[in-house]
Length: 315
Length: 308
Image 1 (tube, each protein chain N blue to C red):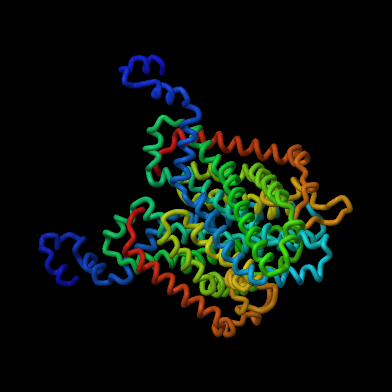
Image 2: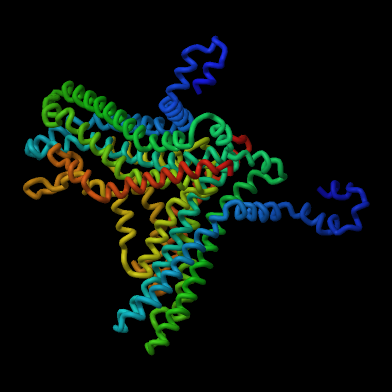
């Protein structure tokens, strides 16, 4: 590179050399920008759902003062928290679900559509390695989407909270209950923790879908989903055991039991609508072998996808 | 069309091409394009028949292991019988579930894939109307796949019956299990009824909607197909704290509850079937009208669509 740069006429300045020198990060940055440009559903879908949810919340504000009075009459102050947190945690759950759906279908499309529409010929002509491309595509569901969901959810929750407090203050019920019963940063912290846990736990799913999307010529969803299901069914018919289906189920939903203490110290089940900070169990989650086995599987899938992309052309 | 055929010069007359065969396709334009459009779909989407066949083969393989390995290893006749009878309805559900997944993703891809890979330019250049194309694509989940899964299920069950009879005979047990050939015939009839009522008539609006979205969305067809419904459910829940819309969607997905009474849908007597109640339920007819509306919109839309 240096020899080449030196051989160039002097009009090519230090800028040229600088871009050539920071090769590892610039292609990655622009690959990520490319993914966001090409797949606007990554941010449009969560934003649209958040906007729609806000509309629904605005309508429900009409009943809020009445509900608050009823809540104060029927529930002891200690039990009001879960009820108060309900709309906020529903918003977070909905957006997490949307993020999961978007991530799944983004991964299934990521390496497939560029082959389908032949744009892979252009992208491979650029000096961007297969590793960078595949990693940038994996970063979208594993990093970008969780961060985006977090930002959208927190913004939505803040707007909802402000609106609710304004309505309560104007109707004479008083905004203080909502403010004191619902600690400001706690739900957001739990949400961030939950999103990180979810990304780590679901990483093998996304990476498997990426691998299938780079490999299958058609019907990516069927190739991604049917083989595990069929093998699980085969196992059930042949041996009357359910190990594989339990394993798949654990991979989809097991993060909750792995990363949170679902029962508090007195053995009472924690309501998932409002999880106190004391119930988080990051140590147990990080030391669980199935997390690390899943991450190894994810890394193998990604390596295979990188290797595969070298030999793939348009389908 | 006829004048055109007559205007063709006479020199190829002697060859076989321009004989009655050559004129016949021009004279029956209504069915030939439809037939070849369906052939085209089957050629282009081989998963339509490969996926159910593969799942059936896997189920048979598992059954083989179960009969040869597990059932022969247990000595208790009752246990052995249970091991042999269990997989029938499981395999049936498995094949039908596969057919359902294939139908959903086929419909989402049907009008989208040809725009994506620009082959729509070629297909629209052919003298095949948009109506024929869309109907041929709708007939895959509504006619071809139910028939196909019916055939595959019946063949699979017949092979399983043969295998388990062999095993039972070899072990000196009474061959007459719950799955005799006559009960198998009854089960096939029940299965056909279930496929026609639930998978075709009751789910028709779902496939119509998926086809419409696939013809309309530029990207992310699955998200466009599912997210609006999810969003409506969420808004209703948060705004009014009711779940009528979600119940409506569940009612549509869970399949016409009017078509059958009783819990054990395939093993019970034929008297459980209530076709009259099913055909007179308003949900069925409203659903069919909605499906027709979706399909008409998809036909209309295809006229103005090009590659994306």
